[in-house]
Image 1 (cartoon, helix red, strand yellow):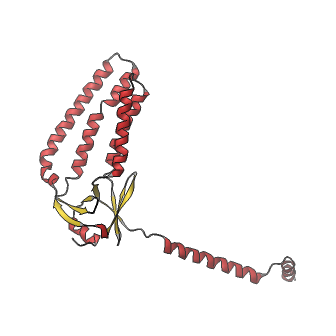
Image 2 (cartoon, helix red, strand yellow; image 1 turned 180 degrees about the vertical axis):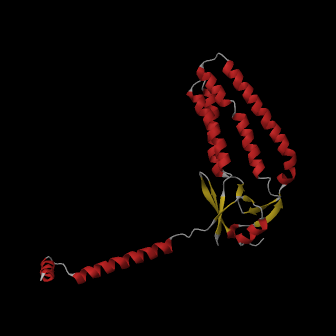
Image 3 (cartoon, rainbow, N blue to C red; image 1 turned 30 degrees about the vertical axis):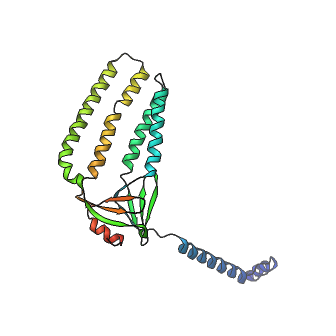
Length: 239
């Protein structure tokens, strides 16, 4: 009796169980179709391999480092007295050093049609496989010279650190205003940090006795990997 009353009320309100089922079923089909279309249009993602890559004529890095360095130099030249402007200019130099370090964390994505190089803070670079002119494995000269340059670079780094510590001590003993002391102390490690970045960049490029070099019409790409021959096989291009 109760069920019959409920059905009458639903019919009076224009509701039909069969129609509700049909609409629900249609909505499910639409969602399924949309998911299928999205899956077809979605670009497939391939595994990324952490490989250090050097890129000749890297406009991305140049477009960041060159303007930043010019602005910093201009700020230091224009500003006569010690002020916050000096701190900004020095900070720009430190920021460029950080960018240089981050560019060592490149990853490579290999697809059937292209090679994609992903870089921190910068746009990824795509190498279509049909654009490759030459690909070869070359000897790494840095690998042979590492035992000579390592101790020399380390000695130079220790010398700069000692000099910085002495300069910081003399700066603290100076009777100059506080802002002058701070700016001087902030700028003292600049040379040492730059030297350390250069040394580190050389260090991580000297681990392997060979590297893979890919040449296209406009650029050269150097891949530092433990097994260049294996990378050639993964690339699927003719050597």
